[in-house]
Length: 188
Image (cartoon, rainbow, N blue to C red; front, side):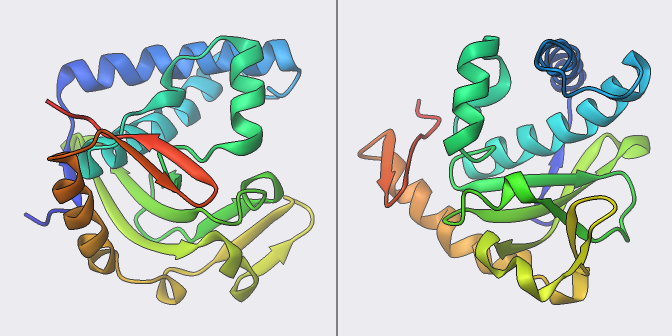
């Protein structure tokens, strides 16, 4: 099994369901939610398992999992989902990476496309792209989204050296300061 596949436990799924329900409530309070509770939780769960997988595979703390509404609103203006990564998760392994205009605000971030395989309770990282390279995709104004086909993404193994550097850094420091972003590593 590749390093870029994360096997979800029952506890992981339960936690991600809680996050999805909580985010639905936040989105309702902010006036962002247009879906039913069931649809919102289904979409939210898919996103949450992808974020959890990236957090665990890279050993980066998942800060945005449970923030109160005012904090979440401010946090999303300047932070990526997990450390330096915007995580976009799909339940179809052939879907493209989709970036909304609000995802592009953090032009220093990298977008990771993840595939949630519900039947196997796993998440596979499919590819990645620096967010500021979004123009190689096609803009769909009706959805207000940039769509980047998987064949244009960088291979996920190219992030292995970044993961290795984080693992080395974890031995001496639990906080990483990069230009534009500070994030916490999961340290023992």
